[in-house]
Length: 240
Image (cartoon, rainbow, N blue to C red; front, top):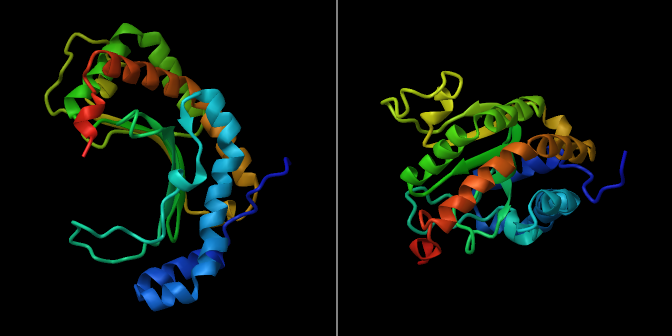
């Protein structure tokens, strides 16, 4: 096994994260801040460090800053009905810098109190923009199906968060139609075996899965670059 920065996220650290969320107390958080940092935040950032070479090989524009790419334990509750200050789940995105590449496709890793998961997802703030993916699928059907097969080899399952109710492309090949209904999509893997994130072997697992799914990311990013070049997605629309 390779020597990695990441050594694991222990059940005890996850339990403390859950307790911190349950207490929802600044006092409790401050008392356990260093434990949470060493047991949760630093290991998550180490995952990013250990995967950075691969991610930059997949996409030279990939943001690999571990501070910017990993979620914070403390939640920003401004404008939210839910005022709970602390989270019990953590995640990281492997993606291009969002201020320069809004709505770009991304790889991710996340864990919850009783499960973890990772995968590749693509959704756009403007749902109609996703039709550029449909157009790319219709233009390159064999490449698309090969990319789908690569995701299956990575252990990923396809899903769409939203779909068109009415068929958009009635003349399309039947094997493409399930994907041409999507307004967004993901290829993901989930497990309830949290012992697997308490070992450096997780890095090998993520590296293998993300590398196998590379053809799908490349397909997505081509469609995304088309959106940007054609003005379907514009940076100024996302500026606040």
